[in-house]
Amino acid sequence: VSAGYFRNSVDENSLYAMYQYTPLQLGRYLRVGAMAGVVTGYPGYNDGGIAPAGGLIAKLEGERMGVNFIVLPEIRNVTPTTLGLQFKVRLDR
Image (cartoon, rainbow, N blue to C red; front, side, top):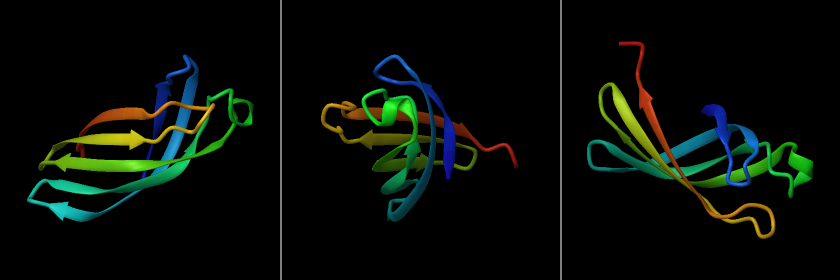
C-alpha cells in the first residue's frame, strides 16, 4: 500500500492511495506487477475529486533502499500517460 502527495501534470495538487500487487520476481531485487487505487486533483474527471487510478509498477529493492518505476496510462481528455519515480528508505532496521 502506498499513499502520498504530488503536483500533477495539469498543475494541481493531488493525493493518492494505491494498492500494489507485484507477483512476478525477476532476479534477486526486481519485482513487477500492477497497482490500483484512487487519486484526486484532475479537474477533467469528477471536478478534481476522487477518481480511479491504475497502472504498472516495477520495484527495485535492496535491504534498506528501493526505487519504484510507475506507468499510468492515459485517460482520454482527462490525464496524459504518466511516468512516476519513487525513492524509498526502510526505517525499521
